[in-house]
Image 1 (cartoon, rainbow, N blue to C red):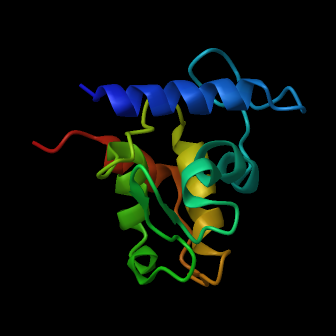
Image 2 (image 1 turned 90 degrees about the vertical axis):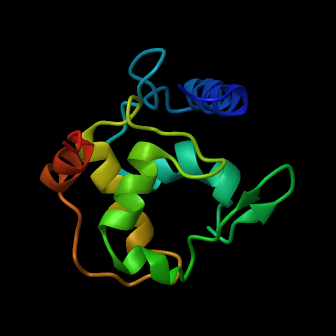
Length: 132
């Protein structure tokens, strides 16, 4: 179960995405339709991590994704997006495997990051599987 602040963040992100001018950001009340990593970053991530991915500090601390050495291990951002971390809620129910891969690959190849090993939707699917 996610906390109240995480729930409010998700509602805000979904509301902002719904108001997107292109009309293509949302596929319904709880999922995003875009498959493009840059669009997903702009719609879902940049509200906290900022448009330059430098992060922010205020009501919470949102780490910089720019030049982030933790992104070198491809599964780190995959698990973070799926499971959430600290103030970041899980986005597992809002993004498909392909969308998680797209946004993770975008962040890992932009903002001063140059990680060449691409994340596949199959890797994301495997990461979603429950650990026994």
